Image (cartoon, rainbow over the protein chains, first blue to last red):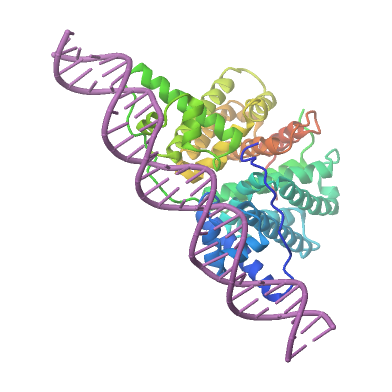
Length: 212
Length: 212
DNA sequence: ACAAAATATGATGGATTCGTCACATATTTG
DNA sequence: CAAATATGTGACGAATCCATCATATTTTGT
């Protein structure tokens, strides 16, 4: 595995006082910013401390090393993305299957309008800091949410399609589309644009019988 | 953009004698190996030179810096992948649409049996060394090959589907599947496995009319 | 109010890395 | 074969970075 200079990445100690929690929070935010601005390679502990308005000593009081900073960011923002996706889907009851799929695509495309680079940073980063399992867990979480939604529209979906498999597939496709959207700005909308094509891909998949 | 410490990445001089060409080749191979083994972060010019059996001075005679090494690897292997994909598709005349799609999926999944990490390295790397355009060109090249193949089976494809759009979409999906296969070893085969689901996804997409 | 615990500081040692340069060796050219 | 050109070498300067630790300051508990 690349970048497998496996090091301990766990927090050194948990902040007890409010002041310390603010310090840790500032460090995580600063790390996230610098990560998206400069990438992991150009991330230095000194720059993080400076951006966070904290001394380098304080930083090392809570984080064991550079990878620890990145790991904290991955954990922090991964959870947030899953929570937002879950909330978004659950907040749309009684819609049609196509509407639901559109909403999911929309989330993948524009949910992070100001943080597409963060998305990329997280994906690129996780494998390099022993956080693959974390990102996989997030994927499984999203798939579970999707599966629940698919069950609601069971009658519109090809009967021989396993919903768990389908949900995993859709999650993968959404992931991709987000990735591609980041690479190929701006996103073309409309029926022929990325959104339209993606909708067609997913709906066709759900409705069609197994190919002969 | 992350990692945008844009530096010149162009070769310093081109090797004229055969001996020098061997040196450059050895350096590129060594870089590729270390990249897949340790990742870009842990790549050092000294290690590359050592692995290549070449002095550090020789390395810097042809490559301006670390990024230059990576850029050379990206260029080298990207071209190779496109060439292999093109050859593979062209070598399968007269097959059905499903067979063709299966072949493409198979290529994405197992074409690089011993170099899945290379694949990841290339994808993770390119954006960080000013080689986004290169990878995009490869994607366009593969899409063009796919489009040509789709035209052959025009009658099996939904008439209102633009083949260029479809080819781009399929290329994206294949990219994803490869990516996911790397993350989730081993690849489950069979109708319910990743391959089967992926076939179903693409075929359903091609055959179905635009969703209402 | 006072001791104990928690938190913050930043100069600094040690290690690593990049990339150059003066020089040696090999190959080509005329 | 001798000059010119191409290639190869590796010690080393300069820069950077990680991470610690002794010390100072703040907060908490009693």
